Length: 213
Image (cartoon, rainbow, N blue to C red; front, side, top):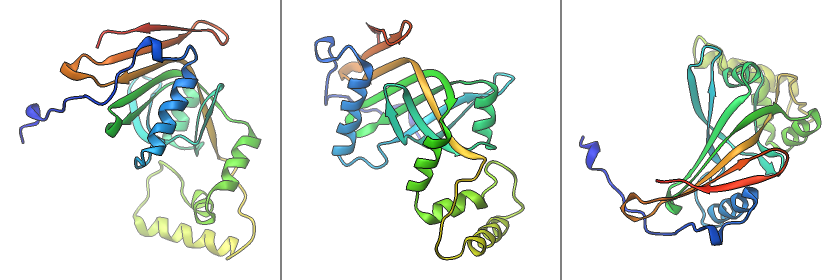
């Protein structure tokens, strides 16, 4: 397959300083709402990049489940590989890619666990079968077969029955990435893309700069 000749021209939008707010969260909210309103599939899907203790990079897709001026939240099993990596090295990065809008957002910063109350509140919002699944799956650990996972699920379904509360497992909860960098990328013709990078200079103060494509 000739991958080198797979090309796309970017012509939909531009991103000028005159159109960009001083607070990157305001711009992210606008872009995110645009992605939702456009009917994009999984607009909250994002790449989460972590690193092992010896510096090897790891990346996977996770789902954004909340954001505000404090940062960007996602949830996982605290025994998973991503959680172990974040607990050992809290530095991480996120990337959103909205292909139909020709936009990317790249975010870097440190992570912290969300509060117990935040984790409980989100867990209660999940469908009941997903809550039971969180008890059944020893995330990132090796399994002998799919049958083992199905057996674990059946055991948890029997334990919780067809109704009643399914509490959050102690080893399941959220992380918040607290950004020090948020970069907005807008595709433009001739590969002369618009890139505006916001960097936090301490506290809530952000500086903005244009980067060459």
